[in-house]
Amino acid sequence: MVGLARRPSPNASASVLVDIARFDDVAKAIDEIAPIQLLVHAAATLGPIVSLPASDPDEWRRTVEINLLGAYNVLRAVLAGPLAQDRGIAIHVTSGATSNAKPYWSAYSASKAGAEHLVRCAASDINGSGRAVCSLDPGVTETAMQQELRAREFPDRDRYVRIYESASYRNPDEVADAIWTLSQREPDAINGQTFRVGAL
Picture 1 (cartoon, helix red, strand yellow):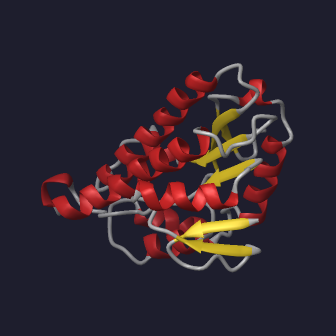
Picture 2 (spheres, rainbow, N blue to C red):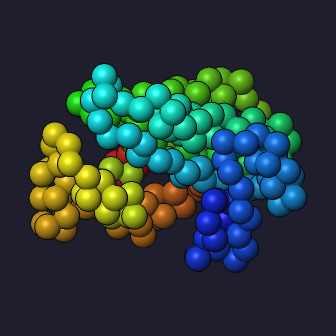
Picture 3 (cartoon, one colour):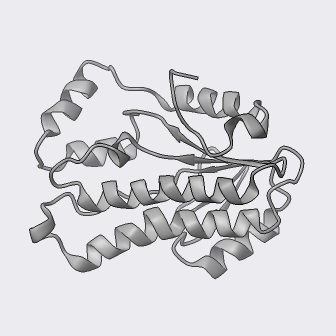
């Protein structure tokens, strides 16, 4: 398993450091590890958690660069050849925020919604090719992003604190199991769809 990220991936057999918002860097990294049977795209940032009128345009744009343009860069690079022609599968990790408009979440929600729709567009491009692109919504999962979220102040923060205190979140192993389950399905059966952990 090879990890592509801005920082070393501690659970990967090898790590490639790359800025996902830079297409040339992403394409070069992916070409070096081809062919790819399973790709999991989970790179994302919360971005500014603030009301739209008070948001910083540079921070807002950077969120789109990572969450939406980053998804494009990965899919563009991998679907151009490195994703295996025989049952190659790309899974994009999405979020419930794509369909739930909440105050202070404009950058994250809009960019993740765009990325999820991008997956559907990419899926239509490769339909019937023996490969698949789909999305997986893990739900609230205890990760570094959740820790960062709880450290901020915003409407509805208490909900995430309650989930943490009651240990009603998902753990990364559950999400990994769901990814494995999807990877074993026929590409035509999952292409273009959005799945949820716990409902596979």
